[in-house]
Length: 622
Image (cartoon, rainbow, N blue to C red; front, side, top):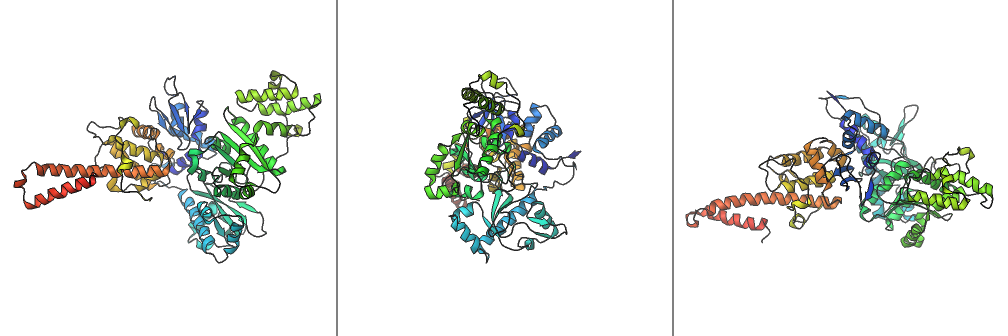
């Protein structure tokens, strides 16, 4: 039987937003960091269906249904696997690959591309630290006020002058082909291959999983263009990616808003001053995929642009993209800085507190919309009022029905002396030639941890069955008290698969019930594919009891930061391993104690003392 390459399935899941997939079929509401709804798979009055946007999976606490976007489509639309993956691939703009024979070896076509990007990133990082011509770029970064720490955090690099600094590090044709595919090299019409980035500061562009997928470069001399981004590649789609998004994930617990700025340096400068919630687009205007990504994380988005014509054009494009997403509770604001100023200069000259105050007091969407559309219109005349009504009403009709939309129509009615019902009937969108809205054209370029030995402080309470996943789907009749501990470990790994890389063989259970087998299988799978996501991991067990148990364990887990997951997983499995060792020691000690002490020989007496000492040490009583 033929099958699709696993790398293709993972790519589709990477490009798919489960919130968007579910929300098109079941209306979701924000509930803390997740989204909730009444479950579509069983009858209920109180919502128990939850969608996790960060980890890209769903789970119903009522009926136990759970999985990734692919599993949801299969169950909700009653599709088979092939139909569901075709639907998601089409939505993500990805062509279906040829099927492979069932016994064909799995080939991850993207892995060498990621490796090519990582090698180049390390090369340019090294050049920034050691190259003989590094002074020019170091001086530039110092003039911009960047610290060495922030340059390290954002992995800044230096591409020296020359056509083959990267090219000469590639050992074979295969490496060269990969570098061409991801846009690190260029091949001209005569077949000559050379470095894309030369004499530039390098800004690696990282996806949400922390992998370098593209690069941006700012020229150091007088070359053109000033900013140069990687082209579209199998790893990089500029309409879906935002610079700085991976950085802000570290601060997501306290995230109330995200600010969209114009360039790399703005994002980095704000982060250096403690404003860790700025992102920038990558050579394109703000679009629907960008805003969908942002609204999954926060309810407020602030556009912070220069106050010149280009900045206002960019803001208007952002507003147009935002209108269809302005559900009640969401907020979009606009901040235009004085000429010659940008977030970088403002935060350095006046401090983070001043800039955050400007974000707080930025103009709301309705103010920007009415001001922009009212330019050149005299509202003291009937003609002016009619013209504003005809221009604005089609934009308001793009907003989802709700209180916000109603209030905007009331505001337009007050400005134009018309009734709301008449305004709502102005649904025909005018041709751009009839509109006074600015003629906006897209710009071509823009800019193993250390653990404490006292594992009990983390492992305390791991036996509490009320707080964690029910493993009944996997429990065999003779499964022991460790089942809940194993399910806890599975939940932690499902939320953050790379944590499995910290699991040594001796930490795994040696019993053969289904829960223990699943844990070993999950750890082995992740260790073979270290960059696996939650959605991809769940996809391996779609429509199985194991998949249901993994979804349940992940959904009920209360820890979500990567560092805490790593620490708790290691602590938990070490405690489990230690408990197994204690149980074995106690069994042997019990055997020796069943015999009168006087009947033990000297070797057995020494063994009993040694056993007792080790048991006390492992139990933390020494």
